[in-house]
Image 1 (cartoon, rainbow, N blue to C red):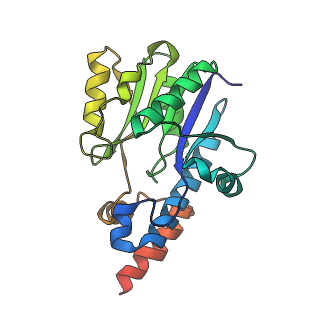
Image 2 (tube, rainbow, N blue to C red):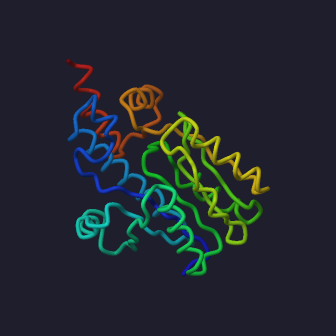
Length: 225
């Protein structure tokens, strides 16, 4: 066991159940394919981290067999436990610290710009900082992490998830508890067609990735219509 771990939060890409805002514009199947592609790229990125354990925190719980078939039986899987986003995140982080990890970071899978180096830098910052936070354009965040001695479960309470206030409310909580975070790189979340197009136009989706292949497939077809 290493002294630090990444908790990669992954939803099983079932059409109609993931990326619903995007699905309203491109259809349930293309939205689910994009969710699948982004998760696979995120997994590939964090697998490249040295001296870091990786745990896939998946939902829904009933899809464990499909998750293992999809992302590999060799991975470590934890079902997301809890009634809402905040409870699920708190349960995962608390479980990791109970197992003896010194530094823990949750990483989301809907930021195709993410590089392994940015995650590594955030984890390393926890040797000096009590927490780390990766802003996402649009008001959310794609990464949050803590040193074991600094974790405060309240950071996940009362947060308006998936809104423009998610990052600022979280930052305010951390600062009010004197847990001022290291700020990781800012990335673009892909939850809407506008966000997807914006990222594609800016060149933020790397060539050769699964996300780029799906982007060319869907947005290229739309441009041709």
